[in-house]
Length: 550
Image (cartoon, rainbow, N blue to C red):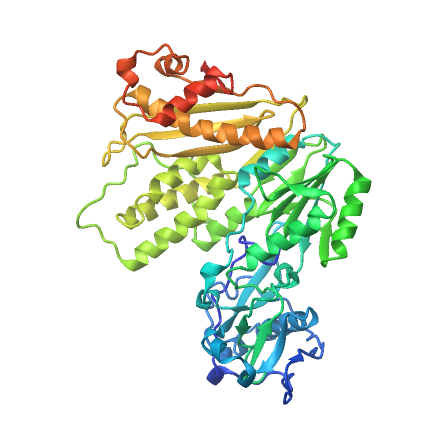
């Protein structure tokens, strides 16, 4: 996993003020300056430790002053992580150190304050996860940047459905998959020469009357992610590897024999040409320090196990165990369903909505949402249902979330399996909806599953945004929304040019919907339908997708 992967547990930011500085290195790497000078390398002395810290030791540790770090049982490990980060900034010549007096007057109010961010890093490839080390980042407070509207700050990220689609396409042994992690990725991105950004240097490491004028991007800047993506894309294009039009985080070699999935600084490389794969990795190593694993074992918190027949088995058991442990539910008695069949949240005017209850409810549901969107499609409806009441009925949300945790206790080893004896290049979707079963808004709930190559690649569930006046209208609404996903996936798979696609098939259980899609429905029943509903009719008329009665 990358150093910034969300599956690890971050410690809240550490703001170090001048009055909080305690000397823990012999001398700062600073001397009187005459003009601008480059940063110098600190002595590279690594502290030695005899014991490994308990992974749970700082699960609730929230340091705000440097003394709290020094008094912590793992202070030496944290200090070592901070020293390593400073050395990395110096080695990569991220900035130029200069006296504050030499900063042009117009930038005096634009010097960005900075802070330390500390994380615990775990190895999730083993069960239970093993503590590895601390990770320290010295980051500017990007929200204090001025003139951000002049910068391009949007950076694309890899959607989970794209990852699952690629895995479903590579279910034979002709495709190799490796995982690569680019160390300190943002620090390799040069800033535009006409962009002047000044940040405060790390307290105590450097004199407080100095500032750093950045030469390269750094974690925390609002434009850092965008600059990094553009920089890496330029390098990949020089290797004849271009991003797809459908997904900017999926890159394909001009030969079609190599795919790279990018999530910030994590790379999943799929190849059916070993020589090409080795050549691309070697070229990337000329630009960045690259940690390469010979097999794709974990990506975005998902444990990826390669089966003997080339298929994949995906699970998040380590993540699930961490959630159960975090909320004290690891030893709970398991139940057979995510929520009881008669469970209904009833909002009362005298419902307690304390800040503590809302925070706890948000923490539980937020943790479950990622699990539901990644591989646990069986809890997606329950989680989405509870998420509607985080502010109005947090106590009932907590009760329902605990029931989901009890369900997870009995299904910890749940996994998605992708394997196919014969490649089937067809999308198959099952879609359904209820009618006005939300007691508060009278809106309907909807959901769908989409398969590719006999493998489940995406799913959704939730409440519709408008009131439906009939079951036909509710079904058409969900069908139109699901068709967007089908068209997106068809475009994605077609662009990869793996194999010609068969027309997609959508299964519904409403004959009136079939008649509407085929153009034989009576106008009185559909004359008030939104324009987007007729989008489905057009796609069916062109046999993409075709629809069938389940």
